[in-house]
Amino acid sequence: MSKLTWFDTHCHLQDRSFTEDRVQTFQRAKEAGVKYILLSTSYLEDSREAAEIALQNENVYCSMGFHPHDAKRWNANSAQKLKKLYQKTEIQAKKAGRANPIVAVGEMGLDYYRDLSPRNVQKQVFREQLLLAYELQLPVIIHEREAFQDSYEILRRAYEQGFLQKEAGVAHCFSGSWESAQLIMALGFVIGLDGPVTYKNAKRPKDIARRIPLDKLLLETDAPYLTPEPKRGRRNESAYLPYIGQEIAALRSEDLQVIAEQTTANGKRVFNIK
Image 1 (cartoon, rainbow, N blue to C red):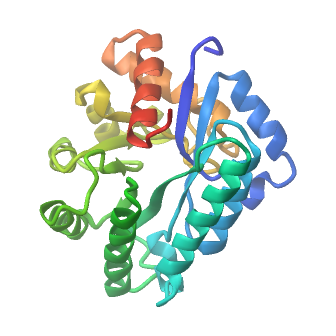
Image 2 (image 1 turned 90 degrees about the vertical axis):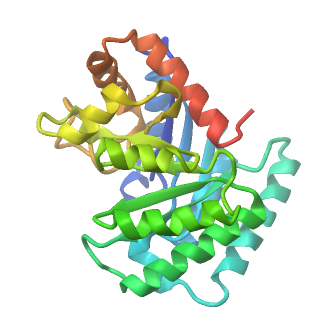
C-alpha cells in the first residue's frame, strides 16, 4: 500500500493527543503513502494551531472554523478573526514560497446528538460561516449528526442564493442514507467516509461506498477518532487511512490503486490544491 498515494482529507493531528509524537505521526503517514493531509478545526485557537502546523509541513493543509459543539464560543468578532487568520496565513505562506494552506472553512454544521451548543446558536453560526466561506471563495466542511433536515435546508438555501462554490465542499463522516447523500451531492458536495465503513454493522456507510460515483468520494480518518479495523481500540492516525481504502475497494470490487488515485484527485480538486 505504501507505493500508492493517499489523501487524508479530514483529521485533527493538531489535537493534544499528538503533542508528544506529532513529527513521528507525520512520518508514519508518509511511510503509509499518505502524501496529503488536511487538518480540520473546531474553534479559533484550534484553527490557529492547525494553520501553524500546516505552514511548517509540506503537503499539510487545514481548515478554519467552528464545530457545532463549539458554536457557543462564536461571537460578533469571530468571522473577522477567522478572516484575519486567513489573510495572515496567506502572507506567511507566500514568504515560504507556497500557497495558503487554509483551504476550507469548517468543520461547521449541526449536531443534535450531543447538543453541546443550543440549536438556534448552531444554526446561526452555521449560516455565518457559510457567508464567510462565500466571501473567501472557499469550500466548506460539513458536520451533521441527527440533524439532516435542518442542515440540508440551510445548505439548500445557500445553494439557491448562490453562496456555495461549484465545488461546495464535503459532507464529512457521512452516516445518512443513500437518498440523503444524493440530495447533498446535488448541491455540489462530495461525501467523506471514515473508519466506520470498516465496521461490521455499519450498513449505511457500506451501502454508500458501493453506490457512490467514485469522483464524489473522499477518504478521511477523523484522527484521533473513529479508528478503522484492524487498528480499532488504538488512537487513530493518518497512517491508517489505507485500511479505509482497502475496505471500500473490497466493497466495490475495485482495484485499490483506482481508489487511491481517484480519491486523492478528488481531494485536490475539492480543496483546490495544485
